[in-house]
Length: 284
Length: 256
Image (tube, rainbow over all chains, first blue to last red; front, side):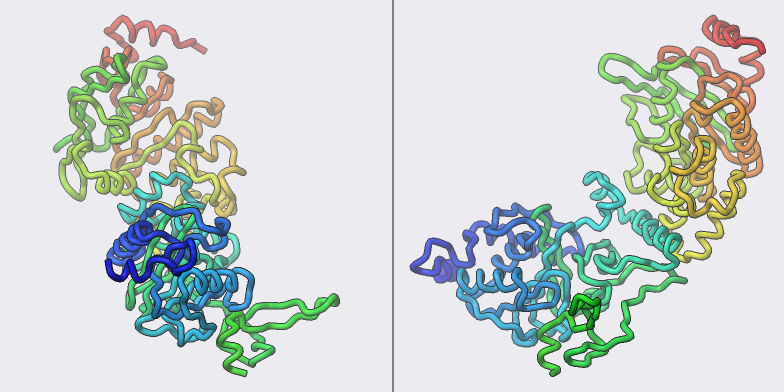
């Protein structure tokens, strides 16, 4: 209770600490605890209206609001970049309503809220990474009925997911899915890793950091606790592979990071640069 | 020998209307049982009760499982019933669209059951799918086409392949040839007859077409108003019907 009163309100302002009221934060923390206890299971929670539209990170922002404290250091990235509109807005939002220190450096952050990427710098023990999730249900495109997908999860009936990978190979000669690549968490639940490139999937496996996933529109929270096995689905004769580039980053020369292709002029000239701005800056 | 499927005292009501009343029978391994009757006589409801899709008000359905021995279908946990239904059972729908995934290729449709029980080798799954496509007389170069590009008869044959790929012991069929033209019907009947014999399948076949029943089934059950009015060997029932309703049914076939 003492903590709550200390946290209650950025004194002179109308908002409670970290925007959400204490009851809501407690409710979200309960959902997070349950999610951590059952890795990969989607826990419903009472999502609130947030001061930004669905699809811009309402789920992630609620999770961050529920776990952020005065001693935390927050980093927010969007597509790997610290300086895109969404990242800047969310970072400033929390600096204002939670008085939290912010950073762009991955190794200094205690909480990293992300959209579409996992930082290149390996995450460490004690860090929490919060993912913004548009569609939490990995089976949604294959099975539109919520009652049915829940049954499939409950009974671990995941043949249909494999069917979609089969179909991809039959049509393209390889598993053509490049982002939001389905994973099996702890050998039990199939989970959508949010739309990160499959390049980042291996980083989820046995990561020392806690991974929290928040979906605002569908009001679901799920989690992968530290050191949990996360396996990308594949076939024995078509094993999971990550993307590779012939080029290196035009700015820092990195060969081992995820590269964005950028068109630089009207004649179609293009360059490849690291999508992780923090990683790129520190290598220059 | 024990029956592979035995039902006793099955009653299913929808409100005040009884769709099945006190239906009982035994199905022996390798036998094909036909259920005939006019539309609305409770044939499909009975089939759904047998498959565990509908819960009857009273009565039991006991299936002699290869894995677990005799089990009451309606007492099984949902997990186990669903496992049985995609390994030891097959269900052929009247409308192939209900039994197929229309959005994925024929190969994926046939391979689904294999993948559902843990097959994870693309090449093997594809080879098995191609073999089955051949067995149901569809050319192998249609393997990567979607069922939407198939004709009605081909879809029905694909549905049959999709069901039989896991080597089920019991197949439930709901009017498998309904809605198809007569020559296609004949081909599918021929195919089914061959497969049933070769794979030593037991099957329950619901149909309103006495010709289909005559060709495929060993034993026949005639239903009217949710009640079984007559049952016996197919030839016996059709050649020498005892019940007034069966006599009317048999007499109503147009001789060609």
